[in-house]
Image (cartoon, rainbow, N blue to C red; front, side, top):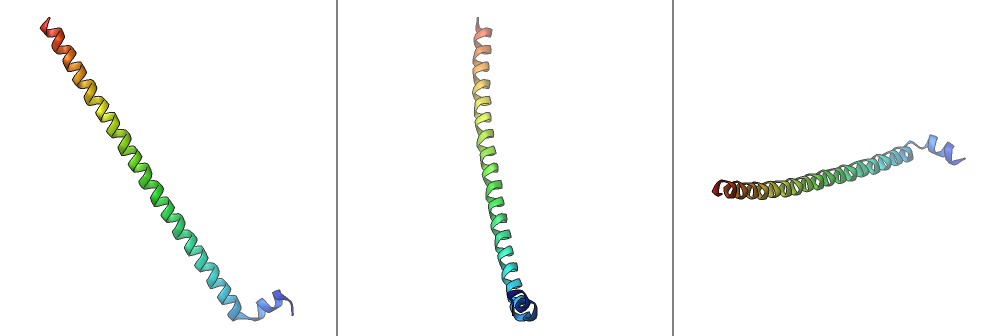
Length: 75
């Protein structure tokens, strides 16, 4: 009996293999979802850091302009 014929005639083996393949697919899907969540978190953290730098720069520029405006009014 060939392997193909054996697989077709042994439903228990076929069910077991199908279950293993399904379990492997679920594992890979969960791993991919985890990687996706981690990548999303990393992007959000980097965006927060970037906006924090922009805000810090804007506050600094605002103070600089205020000082210059004060000097211009004092003259």
